Image 1 (tube, rainbow, N blue to C red):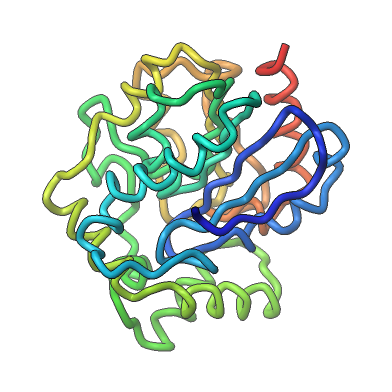
Image 2 (cartoon, helix red, strand yellow; image 1 turned 90 degrees about the horizontal axis):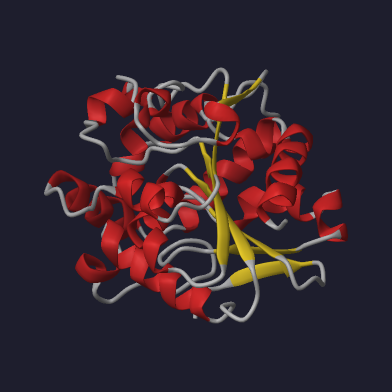
Length: 261
């Protein structure tokens, strides 16, 4: 099974799925938040990331659909309890592939999602930012990685930026190349439509100063959203959980309360 971190002791669970070349450590501030009072928090490491396994068949395990199969298997261990999924960036694509196959899931919060669907193209979702190159490169240069760390947040401390780079270096380089290849060949589903088909509550949250994704692209789709549109967090970039963890915890709590009614 995938490696994971858990905090809290409640029958109601929140499962956190990280983005490209990240790990469960990205959620550490939320795992130490007041959310643990009422919920069990579970943050997993995707295959090839953090402390999860490095694949010997990367073409199968590191594609979007391959990642989703492993996450579905992981979530099957929690099917006896109700849970909400909070999925960031690439994590939203992963959960979108299996959204309509999950038991006891009560809602989805998509954080800074790069999720595809409703005839969207990559140009509709991702800003033309050359500093995204490391996310699709096996072994980027130090200069490229430094630039990416700068782009992920607004006012991240040097300590956090160093943590971002350390987490990046721990990821299997094959993760990025094979994942990018699967995207390039169109090996993915209409993920937004799959989420819509569940008829479960869906919240979309972006940092107002996200430098990676357009923050209004999902508002232009038929997706039914919590509060009717994407929620924007001020003074935050793509990694809201690092820029504004307290504000994000408030949003997650408000959304989750409604989902578990």
